[in-house]
Image (cartoon, rainbow, N blue to C red; front, top):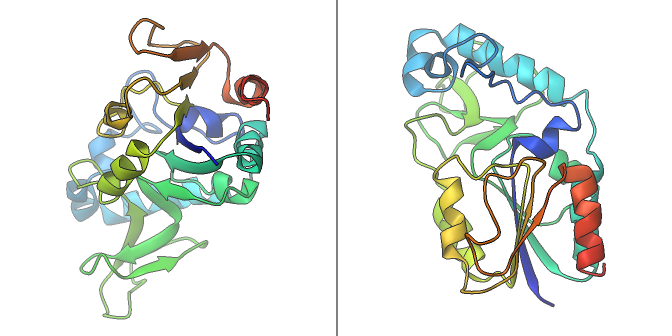
Length: 227
C-alpha cells in the first residue's frame, strides 16, 4: 500500500462549527494571542487562560466530524494514511482515522505544569487547584507560542516516507508546520485543497490544486485517487 500523508488545519474543523477563534485583527475571541496562548500569559492570568480553553473544550464536545474528516478516513481503504494536524480538536479521532499526530496539542487533555510527561485525558472544565499526581497545577495540553513543537521531528520523518501529500484546511502559512512540505520526496503528487489557495501549481512539481472547502474538496480527491 502507498503512504499518503495528510496535513490538516483549522479550515477542516470550521465546517463542523469549530471557531478558528482568530479574528481578522489577529485577536483570539477578543484577546491578544499572547494573553491566552503563551506561557507568560498563563503565568500572569492563569484563570483567564483556563477559562479560554474551557470554552473551547465545551464547544468541541457539542460538534461532530464533517465529510472532510470522514472522507480522510475512507482513504484508509486503499492507502496507509497518516494525518498530521495543527488542530487541537478530536474530530479526526471521532471520524475513525487510525494514525493522527497533533502538532499543537490536544484540547481534551491536560498536563502537569512541571512535568510535561504527565498527561491526562480531560473533558471537564480545568480550574486552579486541579493538580497532577506530583501536586503541580494542571494546564491545557496545548503547544503555546514560544514553546517547542515536540512532535515536529516525528512528523518530518513521516512526511519523508509519503508517496503522496494532501493539504487541506490550512493555508500553509503557519510555521513550523508549513515547513513539512519541504520534507517530501522529489516529485511526489501533492494535492492542495483550499477555496482560496495561497499557492499556484507552478510552485511545486506535480501539484494539483482543488479549489474547494475540505468537505467537498476531499470528495473530489477520492475520485482523483479512485477510492
